[in-house]
Every structure is written in C-alpha cells, then in structure tokens.
Length: 549
Image (cartoon, rainbow, N blue to C red):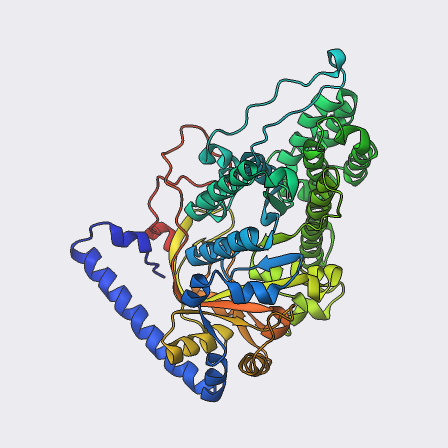
C-alpha cells in the first residue's frame, strides 16, 4: 500500500519518483470518478436535490460571520463542534472561526477540548495572563509564595502539548493561531474594562483523562505550597501509580497479573480530602483558580485509575472504559461552567450564566443514540458519549451539536497507536454514505463546502421548508466515516465506518468535498530523549518502504 504526502509536493522530485507521483494521482482521480459513478446509482437524485436546496455555502456562512448558525444555536449553553478526523486542517480552522464569533458576538466564555487537562491549563493561564500563584499557608504571615514564571510566548505555553501522542492533534499551526487570538481577545477585554464589569476573561481547558502521572504531579505540586501535610498524604496515596511512569496501561496489566493491588481507594480518598478542604484552599489565592486546577487534576487521577483498571479487568471493557472517559469529560464541562459562574458571583450582583464550546471528535459529540448498527448499543451497559450526555443533562434547548464531514483529500494520522504521523490520502467516500451523498450535493451545487442546519433552538431561526425536507430526507440510516488518530486505508469500511441517523446525531453539519492534512508546527530536532509516543518533527512526512509492509 502506498500513501502520497501533500508535503511531498513542496519538494523536488525527479525520474522514477516523479513518474510514480503522477501515476499515483492519476490512479486516485480515476478511483474517485469510479466511486462517484457507483454512488450515483446508490443515492437517489431526488434526495440529492432535496438536500442541495437546503444547503448554505460555507463561503457565505463565513462572510456572514456564521450568523444563521448562531441564530439556530440560540441561547444554548453548550455548543459541541466535532470533526470526522483528528488531522484535517479545515476542520480545525472552521471550528476556530465559529468559536471566535461565538465569543465575540454571543458572549461564550470558554472552549473545552479533547486534550490533557494539565497541558491545557498551561494555555488557560497563558491566555488569561495568570502565572502560578500559590500561597504557602505555613509561611511567615501566610504571605504569597513567589509566583512561578508563566509562559512568555505562545510556543512556550504550548510546550506540554508535545509531551504525548498524538502530538499533531493540538500542537499545530491552527491551534497556535487560536491560542494567540484568545490572549489578544482577553487583553482587549481588559483594556475595555469588560473583564471587571460584565464578563470574565475567556479560557481554554482540556477535558480528557489520559494524563494520570502529570495530573498526580500537579496535585502534589499545588499541595506542597498550599498544605504540605495534605501533600504528604497525596504523595503516599499516589506512590503505587507513580511507579508505572508514563505507561499507565501497565498498571492495568499488573492488576490483571495480581502484581499490584487496586489503587481505587487511595485515589478516591485523596480527591475527597482535597474537596473537603476546598473552601479554605480556594480562598488562598482569591479567585480559586489554582484550587480548581488541583481538584480537576485529582479527578483526572481518579477517573484514569478507573479507566486503566477496567481496561484489563472487565470483559466488557471496550464499552465500560469508553463510558468512563466520556462521562468524565461531561463532568468536567459541568465543573468548568460552575467555576465560571462562581467566579462571577463574587463580582456581579446578577446571576451569571456561563457558556462553552466543546471541541472533540464526531464520535464523542454526535449523539450516541443515533448509531443504529453499533453492536455496543445492544449490550449492557450501552455505549454513551459526550453528545448524548450533554443533551440529557442540559436539555435540547441548552445544547447544540455540530458535525464536520469530508469526502476526500489528505489527513494527518499514524498507522498504529503511539506511531509516527504521516500525511495520507483519504479514500473517496463509500457509496450509500452520508459523505457520498454530500459529495453528490457538492457536484449538484458546484459548491466545495456547505453547511446544513437540521434543528434550531431559537424563534429567531425557524427551519425553512427546504431544511425540513432535507432533514426528513436524511432520516434513512447511512454509513458515516470516523477517522481518529490512526487511519487504515485498506480496511477503511470495517475500521472507520458506522451506520448512523444524522438528524438524531447532529443539529447542524458542515461538509467539505476536499480537505487537507493539518499543518504541524516546524520544530528543530530535539536534543533530549523523547517520551514514548512523541514525534520528531524534523523527520519527513513520507511513509518509508519499511512502514508500508
């Protein structure tokens, strides 16, 4: 199997290499034509025309600052913006654009990402201009301890995003630009006086639970300054887990082999003791930001311990661990919104209602109840996800789920977990898939990108008869593609497709007929030993012959 790289186009090729590239592109183009012809016979033209009549050009949406979408969102408190892949440039750009307008025009307060909490908390401090500032309650007079220096530039703030696979998912050019924009937005709020009066500084958080070791270290680091006695307690209770370093899955294997005892009691006890001291600790630095960070890190340790323990000790671990992870992510959404409300209650006489945008994969954010052929839905416990839980906890009127899909192009992904990233060609979408239907719509409208609104929360945006008809036309279940951090081109149907009912899955969708791989941040070759799963970005993007076998 051969993968061509988009970045390869920027380098000189000659002789056989150049001929090979031309043949590859001709083969891909011929394959696309063949697939489109096959799809045309599997998708009724009347359905294509019905959907086409309801679409809004992506260029028009951008020019109008996504006003139609914002009106459909209405007063929703939680807006989720998904992606078909973890490595598509346009998906990152579009959701960043939508998020900016939601913050500027609608007063949204934060973006919450499918990433590690400690690394994203560095970004949160950076965009808000708040370095570490712990108070040592055992110091002379309870004076503030010397603040730890905060990041002086965006690259420094993003440093820990490089610490764990998949590096490109968050350590990329679009993310760098977005973090810089958040910081500038907050500085403008501050200069205009809005930060003190009507709204807090915007923030950015990670809601995932893979950072067990780093989160444990963050808890201990905080407590060493805030409560040394409690820090000793946490250090003892986290000691067994720390022995597994950055390989937490080894903890699960050790449990399975009876080489270590379950650490459930210890991590739960540490979290509970921290929360019991919450009132006192949260007042040490005024706004409770550092206590909030420590408490969330303790929750990550607790959830991660359960995740890796269940991975090896529960026969239904695939569903159980997925549910643990997605439930923890929604719990964090709850906590982040409550934290912002609590902060504003100290300075505002009126009750504040914070709002957030969530960035994650379509598999997390599309309502899990729409996956009609998922075998896990027929077992107990059934698989749930963030989108379903957000709708259940906040209600339909207070939530809005947006999916992003694509027909073909390139994607940045790896061949296996913890592997190096490559730019790969994505197969044209399969017949009878939503992506293929939307491709036919793109051909019908001569529009390479469009949006489609399937539900509205607001009287300010009532679905047109064309949009209602399109929604009804999409009710029949179809295949839908899900590409995560790995992409298996040769087994794509079985590795990456699932049958869904899109109107139940999303409230709006954005389709791209062609897309490109996410751009990585240029980095010089590191001089230190890299942690397992990190990527040396000085290496070329091509897949070597050894990797193809």
